[in-house]
Length: 447
Image (cartoon, rainbow, N blue to C red):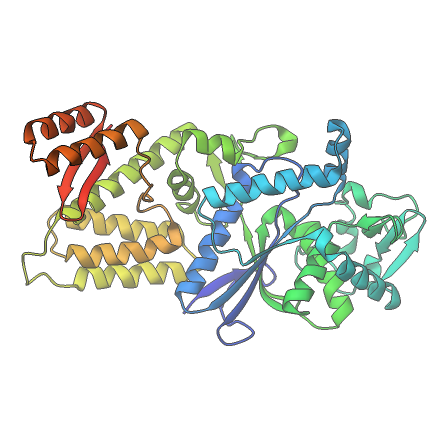
């Protein structure tokens, strides 16, 4: 039985989606004005793991993520670079999607741009005005937080405490309350949406007024997610907007949150130039998703050692044959049960990984277990974790080597074994091993 920690209730709850096997999951995406960093990667690896685990448990998961492609940060940077805001946002959206592919984040069903949902955003703003939750002033339309009875219920803040955190776009001298937030900047003809309204407009279109899981980093709890609740519950009159609120912890550097504003970030692109995707996924998932992670070179070295241990183990299993028919499945079955128990406890990946390392240790010390069954189990785990096995890379064979192989095949047909053998040696000197099979020659890189 899967239990998930719900930020709204501050406790673990048995997971029961609104519809039997259908799970609607929404996660806040990027603002496309710069390269994404590994702090972002942490959030998206976590929710990739969650979506994949839910799918493995038999749920039909629709994972929706927004992309904020119109925003003050985008406009300001575009002005500095003397290009259009649209060109800038599309450039960094492409970079972000490249990063997601490189990180093996394949669970997202749809990426939804804010600018592709302007009609839905305006509809929500108009309905909030009609219901008396919003008001118009000279510089835009604002949400009146005093009109929403439960404002602050997610972050456990009072309305007065809520006034301490207001983003730049929400600043205005003419607001009714200090904590009121912007729904639309300017007028509908020339203006642009506020930050919070795009998310509820997008989720209402694809999920309706209520859905199962909303995810994001914990810094979004207030004011962003609090504003989403106020908007959608005011429009629909239905509670709760989201059944389970799930928030990931920060990735820190020397105790400080990794952030562009602090200049202490490492882009995903830069990280992957020096390290593999497996290293980043293991680094993220070895810590519980709600706990902070502190990034350091020392920690990355430790991750590399753990991966080397996993690789050594899986390589050994692949070479083994099940000679002893008395080998039983008890160890594998116990491991499976322990793994599932850990994952069902609010996606406890560090505990689940401890179970895997315990299996490695026992088999290495002589415990009998069928290699094929262990590999089958690890492959299933890896569909969720994505770091146990190295991805198979298509070997790029240089043209010179291809010509040598072709020449060698000619000599072999002519039964000129001496010249064929000389070419094989030449190929080996250049870093490639040639193996003759019934299907033809197979080549491996031995560099």
